[in-house]
Image (cartoon, rainbow over all chains, first blue to last red; front, side, top):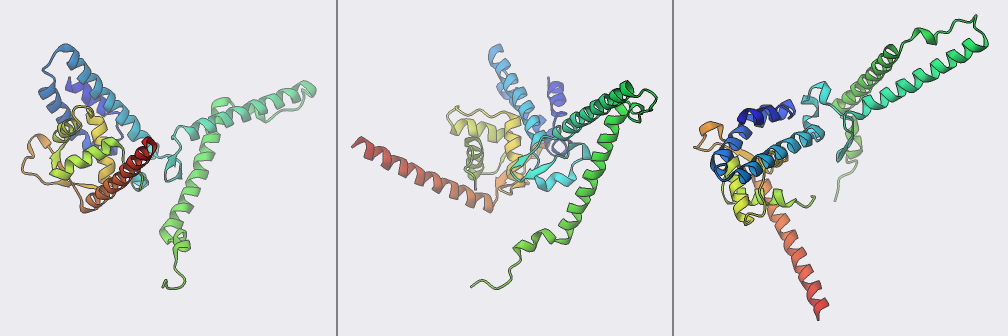
Length: 173
Length: 105
């Protein structure tokens, strides 16, 4: 049974797993040893509660990282931080980019089809781009722009520019 | 400071008495809430992680480290904040009692 709990713990972000997984397994096994001796129904309730708790905990940890540990996370788990109390799920950015890429691809195909219909002798550049290439290009460009913006923000953060507003220009009485 | 949830408050109250391991916290919370609050391990460690990050609690090197057990205790910062939260609740209770009493008259 512990193997199942070990598998569920794999759903936690790596940073949490490293810190707490073994300890959590110890607590789960201790609880199963001490509280899991009652009837079948209460054993099922216990397993249900523990598994539901671990699953919701894993989801919670995936969607809520403190900004302090933000840089320590692998790139795949970083998300856009809008305010300290609110964060977009990381799936939003790729989904929006995907939609944008699909819309742009559809527009280019439609315009090339229109040109083809009116003047078939004109070769269209849009036809050379397939859907996966178009999506890939969009994602690549967006990632590059994101990396440049992140570098800018990071360098500003390191130089302390963002704290200029906190500078006390005259002594408080 | 945002008001604490009942779960976090009970965990802090459990640690206010003495340093405890994960399982001991679970049992104590169950006991002090008269069996009303039964935490799962996932919920407990989610709360412990946030409390550790906010420096309300800290790891404590206990004698009993069998099977990889780790004890936690309140920091002085956590203790101060817990007292602040309790005094906020006292004020709120007093206010509520006054309002309800005046309504009854």
